[in-house]
Length: 432
Image (cartoon, rainbow, N blue to C red; front, side, top):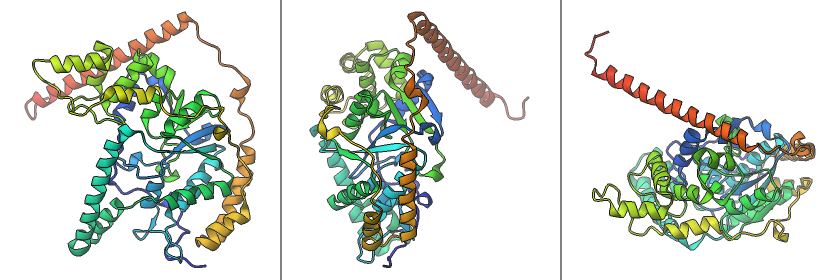
């Protein structure tokens, strides 16, 4: 069976366009705050370091708005816009889109090849508070559709392609086909009641998986003990895997969980836009000085200088409640039971090759890799045999002291660098 667009194109050769027209509402500033103030909370390493680990991966089924190509990961939407041939989505002879299946198949294979046992968690219905953000996305989509039609009439080929990517929609059929593919691959998935990252956090807290994997830093607000970022990036990106530990982040920031959530909300989260002119350093300073968002809001509203303006519709208390008490299933719920199985090789061939026009040799080769590597990943990691020893109060105090000294040294160095730059600019040209 032939194909209209070559489905032999691998995901590794596809990447999102620079400046993609998507946006994510999760704050990249939160990572910056943790990196600068709690550096011990972050580890970076190779994907092979996670051999043998079970990981719950947030899978964005529908439109995932991203700021740029650095933010796209395990999103059906990102596969639809990234996995292309000659600028067009991959299609079967019947004219059915296959980009999402190509992306899912090869991105999953990469993780399994590296000994990781993925569990996919699909987003459910969004909370009501998110409807405002979704409405904005729909409006932008409608504008893009109109612009696409105009570009087709009078624009260049580059403009046509740019706007065509903006009008891509993920359908129920795309979602169901991805689930069918995962089942045939022997890879488990579960459907979250609402937010997938909240369900991932529940599974990680219960020890059913090692970590939650998502690009959303918001995942830490749901109390995921460990967050993995960049795990699902394509191989060609060469991005190290970021491993962020919540407990160390809270210790380094000297905050409790509610203050951390308030910080995240202040920076702008999935539910609310940020307060204009409040950057990461200011947000951190405000939470540290006032202790809670209630006090921060009171300070801003009573500030005679009116330096900051809180958006008219900014229900931060409701946002906080969604982080503290999300709608999730208990880790012991039957719907949260999962296991990895041997792939259905002939089922994969029937679906991907006979029905969707994929290359049979590549599909059979992928199935063989699944069979081999899922079995290999059963080997237990050494860490599973040992229980970490809890640090004493004295050791914790010493670590905190060293951390604070490190932060002060960094601040001092930055001030000195800024001063040197200022002096260099003020120096007359040609002076030594």
